[in-house]
Image (cartoon, rainbow, N blue to C red; front, side, top):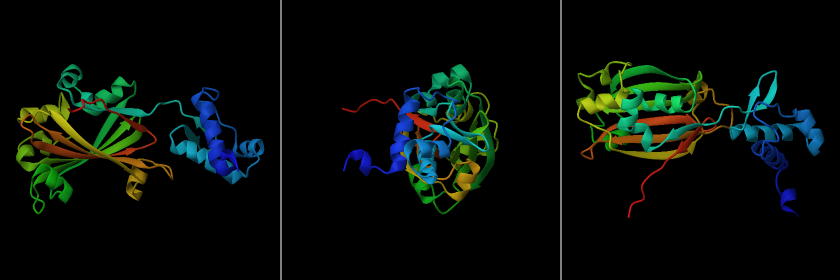
Length: 257
């Protein structure tokens, strides 16, 4: 049995379409052949052709538009830059938050909706990372939903020790002012100098799927970000949930001896 014969038909067809897309034979914005046409061309059932298209959609290569068909994506994945997104020079130059500066640099329109700010008892994993109580309301929880060109990209839940947020807009306001969140942290004596980001992938919860408009079968990237200041002290933890088909990570870092 050959490799092609052993490979499921849906994956074989998806592989051929993927190659045509990546080589530019089916350019961005062009409509893919219909399920009926793909089934006829490749000698497969229509549900197999449907599965091949779903595999491409899960990879972020195509978008299905109700009543119109399936089209090769015209927008690239939104890149999340590693250390550069938190640099003081970027904040000073742009006056923007890391997300807004990142999206702007990629030629897209950013918007952020802060849906809640409240003092809470942190989850145990957050309390451990911040060195705060896990049995009392020791942190401020800020929930933000992030958009690019009005499409939901990610949700971020930030936890800030109450000892830092108390008496500051960090604990009360969606408007962070020039330089946004990290400029306010720096004013409180916590300049971000190092980050730790723990990245994993999973399927979304029902609420995440609804809020981020995630199609069936598309996973999310789950990033636990910890900001660390000039004294080596963790001062904020954010859990980012990102659509895997709309986002990608681009990290450059020093290699330790």
